[in-house]
Image (cartoon, rainbow, N blue to C red; front, side, top):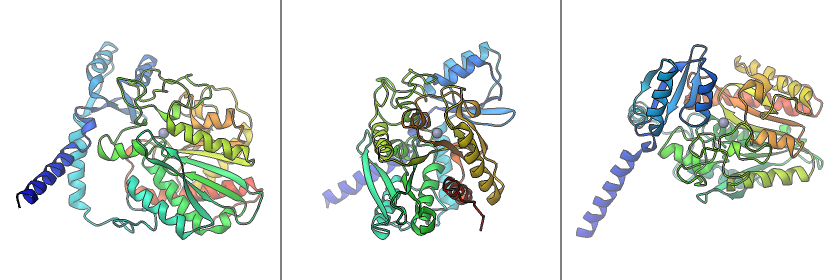
Amino acid sequence: MAVTQLLSCALLVIAVGAAAGFQEGLRGHQIWELPSSIPAALEDLLRDGLLDSLSHSKSHRKVHVPVEGLDNARRILKERDVEFKVLVDDLAEHFQGERRRRREVDTRAAESCTENSCPAPLSNAYMTFTQMEYYLREINTTYAPRVSVKSIGKSVEGRDIWMVHVRSGGCAQGKSVYLECGIHPREWIAPAVCLQIVSRLAVHCSVTRAFNVYIVPMANPDGYVYTWTTNRLWRKNRGNAGGQCVGVDLNRNWGFKFGVGASSNPCSEVYMGPSAFSEPETQALRDVMTSLSEAGNLELVIAVHSYGQMLLYPWGWTTEEAPDTPEMAALGEIFANTAHLRHNTVYTVTSSSSGLYFASGATDDWAKGVLNTKFVYTLELRDTGEFGFKLEKSQILPTTQEVWEGFKAMLLAITGQKYTLL
Ligand SMILES: [Zn+2]
């Protein structure tokens, strides 16, 4: 009896501990509101990790300020006479309160996923990594042999990086298409939309008649799990290459123009890592893309991110024009125009360096510069900054619907066919 009591007592302690620890990585972190246009010197600060831009409107920008950077950031903004307002003074508290409120209103279980099984990806809720793995395991048997799922490598903490292959319908020379999703874990909408696309491709055989589609729905599983437990705003992996700070920005770790316009400060949100491909996640992604490219016919690569509603093509490292720019821009417009028909959402098509900011060591530039893939994009999903990374779950379905239409139109255009919205 004593043992049972002790055990239940221990379980209680664990449960309480887990609740108290929820989003604990954000204890003392703040969200500030700054004017939208700030001096260039402050942009450097952003890059060096004192501030982390979360969203922006025409007049304002919201930034996440890590607890270690509060004093420094305050001092620098004061020195430059930039006014700021503290919107959230403790992010851990903020997320814990939000979870309590959510539980009160949303006691309804999410559709379809149960304890051990998930026959369809959720369209009314964001999925945990465990739920994603249930789903991937199920489609691997339900839709075999047309759909198969395999691990292409392990993360720093030993989780599998899964890749789904949806086979072309009998066209031996089918072109290959590759989608990478979730390399930045806080961008929850990216894996959510990619899993919806997997599920649609599995049933709509006609879409992949001429294509082998490869999708990595969660490229950074450790980071994703961490966003669920400890820090909802986590962007990097969980590697410890930098010593005093954890994590490498996997989308700055690729070996093409490595280090141009990325940070070498391990505490920065855009830390590029000690060397190109220093991380097991980028190594796995590189190897699989290389083998797809060597097998021939890798025609289209899309790295799916959020937010901003933009379809960006290389280069990110320079404003010079990349090879096939007119073709990439034209196919991009086909995506944007078709996606727009569904819900009137505007996706801006432009080059990475002119649309967003200079960035090097990203998937897209590497695919273009090293693999010479013809059509390469970074797709920034909804929204334009109102909710940013914390996009509401009610937007999973409409975002999927417009991306699905745009994606199908791209595939048809590549094979020279014209798209009609049904
Ligand atoms: Zn991203």
